[in-house]
Image 1 (cartoon, rainbow, N blue to C red):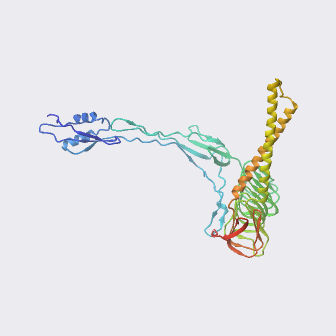
Image 2: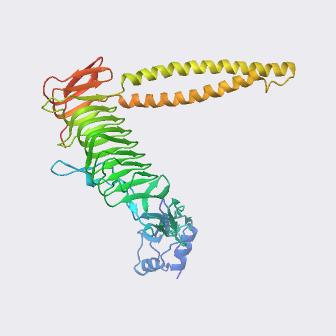
Image 3: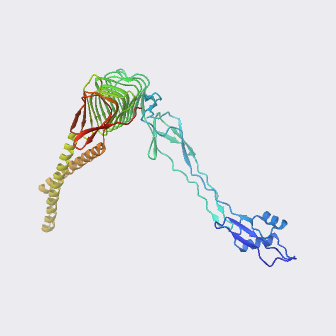
Length: 464
């Protein structure tokens, strides 16, 4: 039998992943065979993925004048990058949750993740390599390679020899810091802190599962977490302070935090906070808050004391029906603006003086060139250098303070006092240099700055 004169038609898809074959109707005495069809496919560039069984089936069934899929490419299978599986909670929550009845659950705060020596912290899953593919024309299709991850850097843990497991080497608090994992020491007391326990000054975090008795001083470069009631003592933290119960200050307590403060209540306490304060009740407290004071729980009340919060106050009840004097200030104070204005003038004067000193030093350089004599140890030049160094140090310090004050002013923009329920007579509201005295009970009201006065508007926020 002869091979047909009219050649089969080959069609390759645009992505070159499939090839189709159409067999013209053969004349009498003509016949196709599989080797001939493979030759035709090869002549059209199709060299891979040829389905010889399909070709044989077309001939057996005499499939003519119709395209059949006769070659398939192999798609690449991308590899999977290696990844780390963390066996601890990688994020913390310094804000308490709200119960269904509207009260705040201070036990829901998860600010510290504690681990013990020998505990598995991380499991590494190596990359899966993947497999290359090939189109019907024999071109290799590169698969994405699974990438290895760099070993975890940090301290307080060890890596297994095979690199697949990381375990803690010390007891402490674990946290992720950018691309590092660190286990830091934690000073943990499982009972009350009292005189026999002694004062605490710890480089790390302090956790006390009981209360704190009067007179103690507790300092930590990290956070301080106390489960029980705190009496009149001193607390200082480089990060957050969390009092799950509260503090009975007795006019002798001091609390300072460079982070946020969260507590159930404070009574007769002096409080300084660089971040936000979230608390239910403030009774006769003096508060200096560089962030926002948030007291929007159904029990949230400020009664008595002097409160200052740069970024504003949100409180359910302000003052009480006994008309107790309660002063609340927000925004940047007059002293801040005055200090900022003073620094601007001082910096300008210092810069002018430095320019004069530079001119004097350049004159000595010119004399050296002109006379060929070194003035390096000339007392007048040395005095100018000493003055220059002093001025530069002062200028750097003043600029840093100016930068902080400008950030403070920027944060204070748009601050307001939001009273979700009632505000009582006896309350004094201050915004900057302006003062507003409450003489009648108000309900659901906001105090804000409008041009050169304190104005009010309805507060539509709901009590949590």
